[in-house]
Image 1 (cartoon, helix red, strand yellow):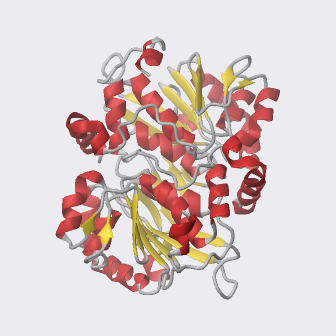
Image 2 (cartoon, chains in turn yellow, orange):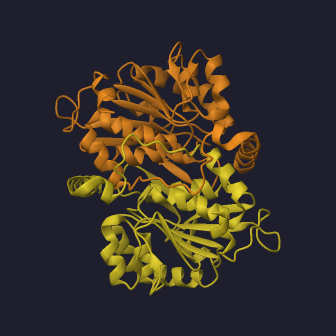
Image 3 (cartoon, one colour):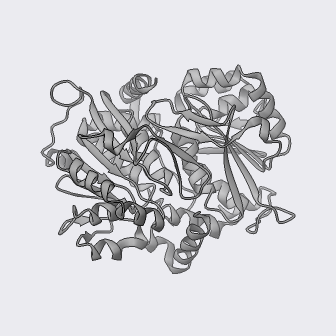
Length: 235
Length: 235
């Protein structure tokens, strides 16, 4: 891990970014997104010193998740935000992604913000949004396991890994992979020791009762059932 | 796993609960809670068939998390809710927990709801709230690693496991442990196959970049740094 990070070219800056200001991390939030895609990595990154995490929406206020049970609050509008050190784009239902990529001001904002980020990142089908924005052409990237063909159609090279780094772009696999990627980013933004302490702060010592978290491990029948449960649970 | 669940005495009911109504799962939300404590298991449980997950607060509306960057929406007030099949109590900052246990209507509500639940559950320091409500006396339970002494003071028997079941009470360790417990509950409420499919639906195939998620693995220096990062990040 230390070797990987040493090769990123991003200096560890436990005390914030150059000039002493706080590191600014923005999470794009939108209707019918998957809440854990955002909350997982945000929980990790908001524990870093001198770091400000903000949820940013098309407008301020409530953004309801894809299953309808929960909602997050966007504290800032995209029009309020001109610069970010880290942009994180979560995924959501197919309808959610379509609504985002068809909203030209949001796509323009993503491209604009990306010009100045240190890291542009995504979780789950959030990478499709980055791909539609034209940011992943020719790049290795990952996405939710069932969406890999869409990623390839938009010019990215799908790699079935938990997270994939290509230049300053880091894409994570489905939903819970955002926590793993969050720790990778935490180390890249500060140092391994700080990231390790954040892992303990979240007591992230995963012990799932089953071992069916990837399509290969789960097999075709569970893949079919998973897709059915997803569709039935989405509003 | 199958053996554990066969011993719970809770019938697998993929089609909902007896009478054909939807299974009702309620997550208590409160100011300065840890968002991932709630969103992790809620994301798991909201994918189950015939299941309704609701966030329930002292009042309706915004509930801000302990780091201040994010907020959830409570759609129901505790006064609106008389029965739940599953109650889930997340944790939060020390101030958050104190505010909950000192709010007599909330504690009365927890005890009332608990009388009729199939499962009463917690994540992280949420188990301290259950303990203060008098529900864990003499029971094995777990909590956030740094809070184990408080749990013991309130009469529970601390067990350092990812999640601990005692009768109908299931307590999870810190923050991210709620996802693991969520999958355990998913299996208990439906069946192993459905829970396995939900694990795939969330692509929960954890691969953290480090192995410092428990205090034993992390050691005393990272424990100290983790507590410092937690305190500095809490508002």
